[in-house]
Image (spheres, rainbow, N blue to C red):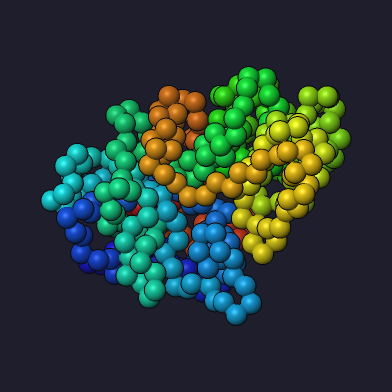
Amino acid sequence: MRAEAVVFIGKNKATFQEVEVPEPGPRDVVVQTKYSWISTGTERSYLRGERVDGETPVREGTQPPFPIVPGYQKTGIVQWVGDCVNDIKPGEWVFAATSKINLGSAKMGGHVSLAVTPMESIWKIPKGDDPIAISGLVLVQVGYNCATRPPVQRGDMAAVIGDGLVGQWAAQVLAHRGTKVILVGRHDSRLQRLKVADAIAINEGKEDPVSKIRDVIGSRGIAVLVDTVGSVQTMESLHPLMRHNGHMVSAGFCGTRGLIDIQMLRKGELTLHCPSGWERERMDRTLELITAGVIDTMSLITHHFPAREAERAWDLILNRREEFLGVILEWK
């Protein structure tokens, strides 16, 4: 079958073109994509030629995996279901993760108009929920995963590094669990979008986060430190403020610079969590929290592009033509 897709054909080269998708099997669901949410950090690093796969950086002697169909999340309407699919019907709105592609060595992709998707990667959208709000479900789940790995008690201090989407959602869930949240970022426009009561936002370009956080926490110490941008340097700078038996969470892509001193962690008996990917149970719980209004996605969307104008979307993301956060592709 033929479909239209966003394709990264080389370093810093994004196109919109026809691709081949395999015939669906008995355990597949075919979805007509309506909205796909760009994972700006992950997809930008692919487009820059920095990754071999989700967690493997390009090193000397290895090549980026071009051409690829980037992305891993979308919502749309079911067109067809396989014989082994019992609880999903044509005409229903669903969320779909990665879908099957035939493009060189690439066998899976996200931003595609006709999504042949294994039934294990499909979620029904609850009635009344906006499909756009659900279209970034995998990425929202990354924030949920960061925020739920460490044990916390009400009133604990939690610091989140990064004012992007994952940082915003990690902060929302940590606040829901009863922590006092400090968000460290570099963009006033993003920090102002933080939807967490009594949270403290710090622009590290304007003030020293170490001094500011020290003033805020006093003698309590940071119970949870979440890095969503891959900044080992910032984690190390905040290490002296950690509470004994505290927890660090590393979810940002560190590339070839992901080294951390274990002895540094041992001194405070700190635990390091390294979440990655998604699991069905976490996705289910994330969807429940979006539906319940605990996790807010819609207010973080700053841009919509027709899918056919995908090159404009990635030009914005690569070159930061203006401030952006959530970027949606609309498929007609």
